[in-house]
Amino acid sequence: MKRQNYRIWLALILAVMMISLCLPANAAEIDPDAPVSLTLNVKSGSDPVSGMKYSIYRVADADDFPNLTVTSEFAAYSVSFLELDTNEEWLALAETLAGYVASDNLTPYDTDVTDSDGVASFPNTTDPLEHGLYLVIGETLTVGNKTHKAVPYFVLVPYVDETTGDPVYDVVSNVKISTEEIPDTVDRRVIKIWNDGGAVLFRPPYVDVVLICDGEPYETVRLNAENNWRYHWQNLPAGHTWSLIEYVPTGYTVLIRLQGITFIVTNTKPVIPPPPPPPPPPPPIIVTTEPEVTTVIETITEPETKPEPETKPEPEIVTVLETVYIEMEPPETPDIEDPSPPSKLPQTGMLQWPVPLLGAAGLASTIFGVIKIKNRDDE
Image (cartoon, rainbow, N blue to C red; front, side):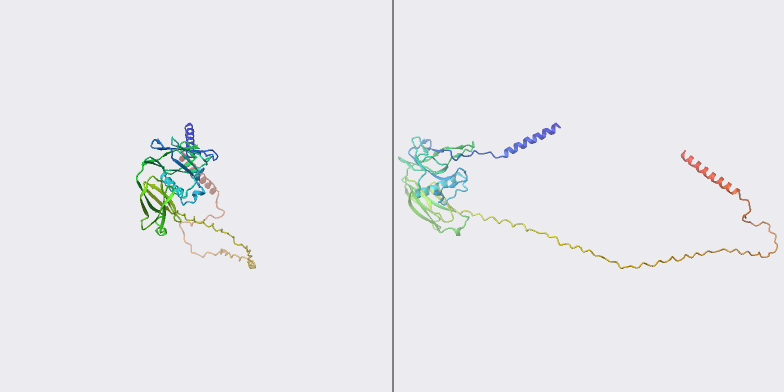
């Protein structure tokens, strides 16, 4: 009995442990009214970079991240914030929007210039800093014969620490920039990629792209099948910030990423999910009506039968044979002497008393014999 109780308690403990493992941990909720800040630590290698201007642009409300509500300013662009699973995809989207920011000369949410420690802090000119997803863009900085180039990227303010699960309201971003010597000239390329499931017949015959230099349009190029949807700029002046924008064809979104000196422009046709199938029709309503039952009582009248007249049983005819003794006189016979007298039945008047006595003696002998045989069988 004790062993059985032990097993029951052990099973209950294991069940509780399994249930506790299956329950989701409650993540800390972000206080939408908490004040926030953003600090950039900008370095080239291990050396802080001073005098570099950074601008931030509020792209979306993100207190319910990963659910984003894009601001009206950036919702006008044919880009998609959905299905961005890798850091590379997020950087490509940042590069794409940075080109439109430069081309359309959008006003930044806030700006700051790195100090001698390479630090830029927000809020700087705009107070307070709102919660949201920010696009961070640093301007190219030329010092002597070297240029410091920053890569556009996104930063979430505030965010939830994946290790502790706690919200972080004072965000610190360590920015690594590239530094290279200023060449005499630079080259840039553009390549168009279609992500539309091979629907060649539905593509536009051409797409126009614009090369941007320091926020100003430099040259517009038309890409089509004749130039294999690509173009190469050679001997561009060095020491400038080069970016690219596209006039996005209708029905497509665009993503532009810079790999080396090549802008890769990807146009994606959003997959429109087929409409959900209509709900199945409700099952037919079957109304069962019982047929009206009519009870018919049939009266069967048997024909009147007249009682048969009593018939008297015919008298049984018994034939009675009557023996009639006729006394006849014996015929006269001649006198013949007979040596033996004739046998005669006893006639009335003869002697009868020995008969009962002899019968009783015989019965007694029979009873005695039966008793004798029974006693012998018992022995």
